[in-house]
Image 1 (cartoon, rainbow, N blue to C red):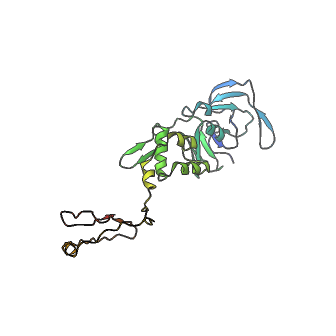
Image 2: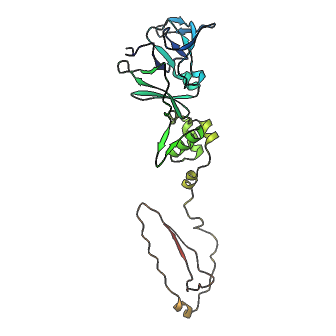
Image 3: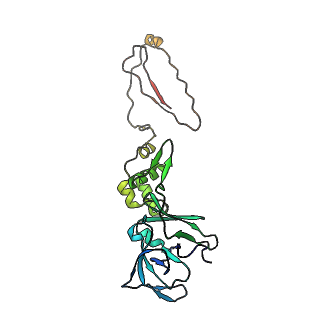
Length: 267
């Protein structure tokens, strides 16, 4: 089934097209007779030839993503190539109800899924609102005005993994729909993260099984022991928390308050 919208004003996003192919009456600009016609094979085996080159009326798209070809032999609707947009640096995200094309951190094209054909349709004359931009609202609005800001923000959204781990996930295709998240951008723009460093600190006490002989300390006189004060430390913790403690060892000299030991506990 064909979309319910007028074919001259809309086009379908097609992942199988190698270029943008427009109807003869499609809404576009800069029509010029072509000197190198393209031959396009249709699904039924027929071949049709392009007659003109044109430019999409979508100023927010990169120039390489706006080049199109007029194919009078198209019977029903114009086709926009997903591959050509991605090759121009854009990202295309499909959902069950709509489609979004982003360039860096900005949304440059949106469309809807046609209820009758179940295909994703976009307008051929499209100027997106100026405020369509990736945002995160917490106490203040955080706007990504550059690729570096976008990479830094999305890295934090992933709980600040180690750079090598994030790159491997990107290479495996797990972030294909995330705008600007590519291996090259991560290597170029992702700086050192305090959250990553703090999340990978070694929390295991070192040298707890030392092979060195302990230092032998002479026992104090009995009268000194009687004068020592006892200090008790009580600590409780929830099952979900951790505490760390360390007995530093006997002081070489008794403190003014009569203490000889110190127990350090960190909650």
